[in-house]
Image 1: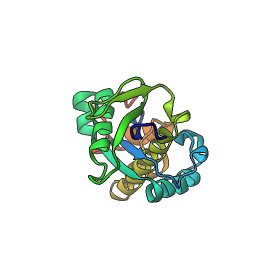
Image 2: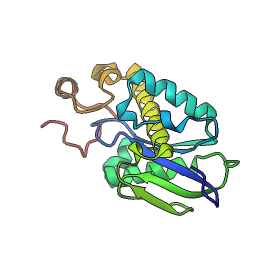
Image 3: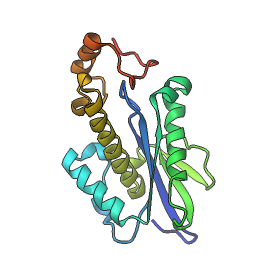
Image 4: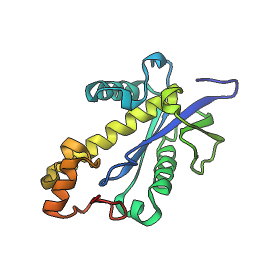
Length: 190
């Protein structure tokens, strides 16, 4: 979206609910070659469609930044503040030659501290193309990270549930204990 003073940057996160792994956020400034009508909330897309959409967004967007908050940070400052930290880091990760942003639109009720005016939009990932794009990129980046981590620690099957609180994941935690990336502040066992 372009207004009279500049471009919009959309920010969203993925990974608030899992019992393990980082929370990931993406900041996206869309370019003119992206079909905004094709962008949807990442939760509405199949894994394959998310992957294809993320590749298209990353290759055609004016700028993309990705930020992370790690399990130790989540445990120390809580998931809400860690999500805002990941969002702030995503904005800071935008390339230095990114176009000037006049407004940042963030999915949810809160905005992180940013050097540009920002507005939180509840369910913005379903209504604002820039936020939808950020939602897709964040989800794909986090899922890929969890898949790769499963190559290191295979006992917890992170490649299948990505750290979310599935019955199987909880069973594996009972069997093996917690991995180095489990969030100790979360209720692992119901």
